[in-house]
Length: 397
Length: 119
Ligand SMILES: Cc1ncc(COP(=O)(O)O)c(C=O)c1O
Image: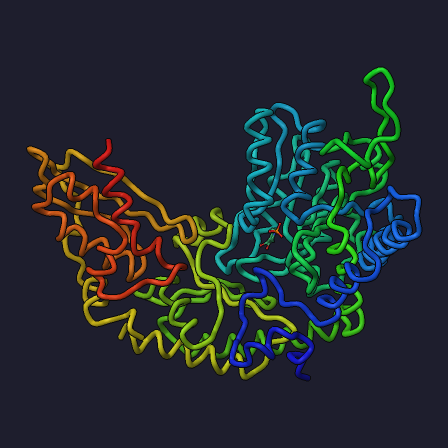
């Protein structure tokens, strides 16, 4: 099945093999149209005006929340908070839940695979509170070392925060095991679903995670919209993040009373069009069905592996069972040069540390090249990949 | 591809002046935050003249070639002349224009040099 024609970018760049979806995904027509339609037909501020247009806008906005709730199987739509993205969602948790719950000598467990956005907020909080960060290491086959994880857990563990799908290696993490073990020690668990959300089924009740975060732009939606899911009983208890308009019920004698979640966490005029377009992105995924996305991407992943494995001087820094993402390096050729040469063959990949410095340290490389696949990729894109690799070897012979 | 000319590849594979300089009295390190590359420049300055220039650090072909070529050019320049070097001078050394995404690779050595000379 060729899904490319659902994405207008490829009619403007027919030669492009876009292998950088882990960074951000391209947008289907329905999502692009939704933004222009909303501004043309229904635009007004939400939760404020007592007039029809504002009511329409508010309804569309709230119906997006309902769609997200159903998509991840949350219990209530009040458990869905809109943010700017994964980064803001995690910083929100650190600044609210973290500030109130992390104390001196507490331990925060995270993995060597974490994106900087799920590492730096905790590192900074730990430094401030004199708490400690414990990193789950990797095994020799580059998978997360779950035995080591079990040994890290103790009564000091307050938080386990973990990616669901590594943005650098493509490993699918055994979340259920990690969460069940963490809860035995009464630790709170955050799942970073930024990469997994458009590839794997997400059911927050089945996972029983306490928080789960993701970004619209990595799931065919617009930039500037992100999600924070939090269990209702936790969101009720924690203080607001930003303060300002829309989040306060009343202020008397300089004493504010805040709205209940989610409004408590949504100060100021939100990204209304982006939130509404996110619903289209989710419906797009639902129409295609995650299981079909998964099959499509798994097929391409094994084809890509076959191509990469042909070259003895090319090292794959991804475990055997990876999903859609490969980090790799080529002996004697820097990742920057690989990506420049790939670009000359219309193959777009990422080169760098992928905001995952702890992983680069573990792999003992300063940077890698990374290719990542999604729905719109085709076997022809992988033929281009193969030609691009050959060109690297030819230039740097 | 024009970018990977014989001469750039030659400097990448056989870098000149890529060693520690024990007699350096000016030195600075610069990072390329997108890839984590790191270049350290060592300069020996006497009477306002650069009499020796070396560098260390690994990186891409563009950063290695441009830094290596730069160290050759620096030797014999006055401090003022070195401080006045611009991106364009690096393009001239490399013999190609560098696209925006790779400018930092081409100028990392120059930035480190000018940082070292300020100290
Ligand atoms: C695993 C993971 N977490 C977090 C992020 C940060 O997402 P955003 O930049 O949308 O806030 C990314 C994006 O690269 C990611 O891949």
